[in-house]
Length: 416
Ligand SMILES: Nc1ncnc2c1ncn2[C@@H]1O[C@@H]2COP(=O)(O)O[C@H]2[C@H]1O
Image (cartoon, rainbow, N blue to C red; front, top):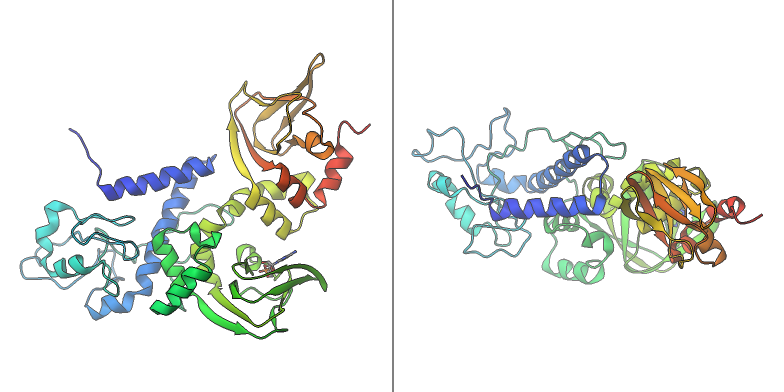
């Protein structure tokens, strides 16, 4: 028998496959559990935000029992205890003549007749302002959590976005122009992007006002539409930024006090996203690399001197690579382009005529000598086990390692 997957299932699997390819997870099952948990939470969040619309149509999203969705039933369909309905993503450009949608669920063709009462909604579900149809056997009350990772968001089963408000066409147009291309939003799928945009609150701030005070608890994450801001750590100015930039993520990511004071240096127009929506929607996608590399960077002795902010910026610039036993990672005499941090595995460092001169393992680093001294590679590095490394390009190495560069210089094996 040949099983064929619906286009929706194929699209969902493709997304998942892309995520795996990008993350190269060492614990595939935990990664998968977290990934699908997050997808489910995002879908719930979106539906919860629009619950009043469903209620107005007598559709109960959150039934008391573990039964699937209850809905107004025709005499014909009342005898059926379980039913399937179609979830059309309201965030994508759907073809009104098709019942297959990106990031949504399609109707099981054998079950269509059993759902006359929903037909009208199914037909109009993609139009702006209409109530989105639901996935098959949907019950928003079921628990979603499966995570075992330290930085996973809290349990949000009881979470409803507090500040959800559909933006006007005019606001959407402005947002699209000003922050639509910001890297934070580009990484979101269309459902999540729309949810985040509708949870943003507009804030006008006068020149000279303090927007964030170092040491305070984190409440909002900010994106700058207009104006400029300065950052101060312990009263020393460390940074400035302007339109299109964002700030205030660290305290929300790490549940830590604000790491800097932020002061407006002109009248500013900001968009603020509340802590829970940030953690729920943005954290797992736009700040994924930071979550992914956080444990590695925190435990690397050479990076001990970096602040949370430095580590976050460093993580943004890292890429992952896996090498098989016997593979050459660096060849003596080549030009140096990358610095390497070993997440796990083992490598031999060897020199022509001398053989193996060093053995490195988890949380060691290599590739710094050529970059520090602007020299060709001084040794060959070969994986002796399956080895996962985080790589940092030359410009990132010079910009982002901050005080860790002094430690690298002190440890430079060619220095003496
Ligand atoms: N050098 C810096 N150190 C710490 N935070 C900084 C720095 N430069 C900019 N920031 C931003 O200032 C924000 C203050 O609030 P958070 O700690 O939540 O997140 C911080 C960062 O987004």
